[in-house]
Length: 93
Image (cartoon, rainbow, N blue to C red; front, side, top):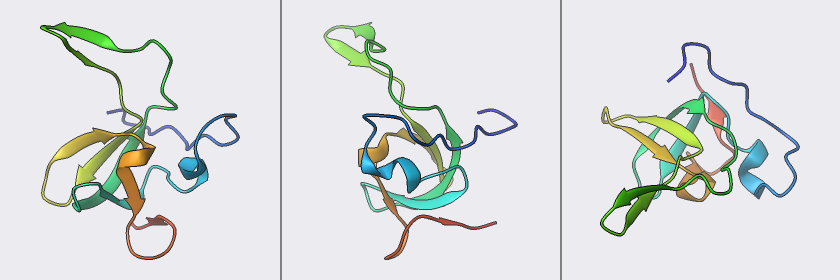
């Protein structure tokens, strides 16, 4: 995690609808129903960035670092996030 978070990028062609909905500081819910705050933005996924872990397993970098309210830190992409509450992602201090 960086000490000075990246600003949320905008206007990236080909990036999903969540591009303007999420930013560092946004309150979100991950797909397991756990909530937290986005603490870093690593930018859109890069083609070919998968890493072979061996044994038929691979991983790739994720877009967002989210500090969950239960103390866990997770890394997820746009499709694994929803804004907290009924409206757009909100910035809370």
